[in-house]
Amino acid sequence: MEIIKQGIRRVIVAVDLKIQRLQNETIWLQNAQKAVENTLSKLHLDEITDWVERQRNLYADYFEELRNVKMALTYFHKVKGIVSQQVQLVKEYRDAWALFQRDANFTRDELNYFYKVYTGLLRESSDAVDRLLLVVNAFVTKMTDGQRLSIIDEVSASMERALNDLRQFNEENKMLAVQRAAAKGEIEMVKRLYGF
Image 1: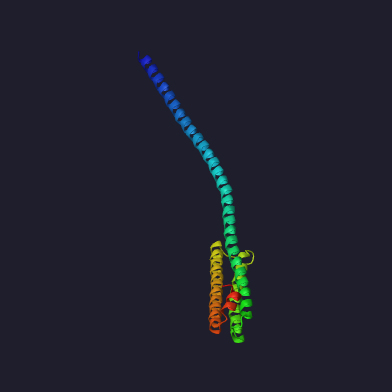
Image 2: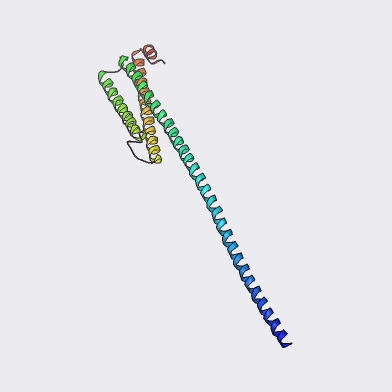
């Protein structure tokens, strides 16, 4: 009986050892499975990260191009407005100067003064256009888009001031001509000259 007991104990110990080895193998396999799952997850995450990065780069380039187009359009509209103001300033100067030269109510000294004022206004607008050309030409002047827009806005405001000053100066001189003509009794001639 003792021998049977010892045999059973040995069998139990052997089975217990076998069960412990199977449990260790199971734990090892579970750990290996987790490692494989982690590696696969990392591969999937890397693939997803790569895909997201490619999409971000693709759309970043697209949005950068859109931003550049938007800035170019903004420049274009502002520059177009400045050029239109310059053209208007020169036209109004020529028209007024031609009228004032034909008007007998102004002396030669007054016409010389008008010429100096017109020359100053034209020089101011010409300087503004020169600054504009430096800003618009990206290869000559390196600056940020914000700096470019700021200078374009300054040039636009300067051009607008020059145009408003010209108009005010012309109106004041027309009114002076009308007052002098009224004093001389030649009001109809001056009205026809200035289109009143």
